[in-house]
Length: 160
Image (cartoon, rainbow, N blue to C red; front, side, top):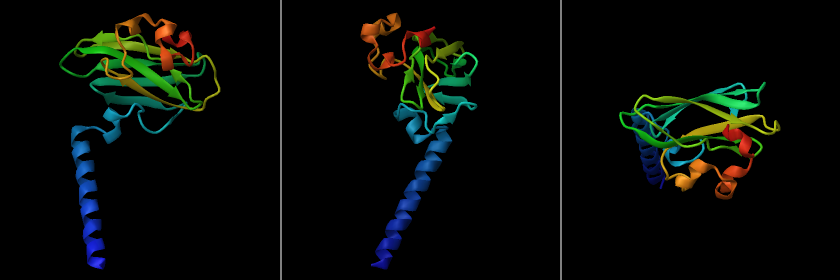
């Protein structure tokens, strides 16, 4: 019986190591592409700098303006369609998404998401690419509050 447990433990270890090595060779975290959240929560003084679906997002929090500021850049050789950014605050509120933009290969655009409240002490962020996430269609570019659904939690000011 102990031999079976030992063999099963060895199999689990080999599989775990294989997944970790496979993901690190591609430069991905297993959840970075599939899940909406970017991972662990950041402190207000931290910088977010990650690439997801070819969009590199660099973002910082500015307490003076109570906003998240940075850039999103296309790191691929093709145009990325409908690139937008979201920030999720520790208080459960969501900022964004920003208006969708198409980014040519190597193109970079500035991002700003303004929070309407200051009752948070941590955050996560992520870029989104294409229509697949949240089912955003062409009406998303209008940012009409009737079409915003879950993205209207913090108010319209974060889309400036």
